[in-house]
Image (cartoon, rainbow, N blue to C red; front, side):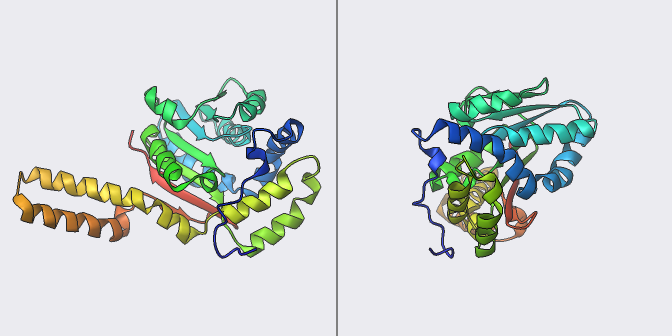
Length: 273
């Protein structure tokens, strides 16, 4: 086993449509305990979500993409209620098995749908913030590009995608620490496979850089458009400027990857909706 590189050939057992339904159900329900212990979302909420939602001065809407069994939505909704914030939470997942578990967590301010980001965009949906947890490492490069682009188009505010940071210490600690919760679930095998599939911070930043380049190219096109048809020379200069902007100043980045807690990554951006 080599943790120096992502093992993208691995597949998690729970992603198999034919996996044991009882073990899958138990896995989805116990994610709430696992995520509360290791996900770092309490800090992300206090640092990024709460200030934004409190500053709106009106009821807010927040979307969780790929919500699985709905434990993150439930936890964030509880934190917002404690803080006196009025928020409507929507969790979506295209897997009907996960959706069935998530629906058991519905409340007046928490709803779930069996759908995905593409469908929500087609419906013209807009949210004040968009989040996800443990989704990015599942995605192919094209799926990652589509997912992150959709999330920005659906949000008028923060976009926050949290995931695991790959590393030997994370792998070893998880292998031991998950033992009490693992019986009857996929938590042990799938958790270790998730770590092996996951990114390191620099890898995730590079994976997200095509979005930076696209933004820089669009900015360059707008600048050139403002000067009229300048001929081949002007176009060449604009192209060079766009390329430089994509890899230049930190302010041009669409996504910023940071570590909000041990063994955790957070990709942050701002919506375009």
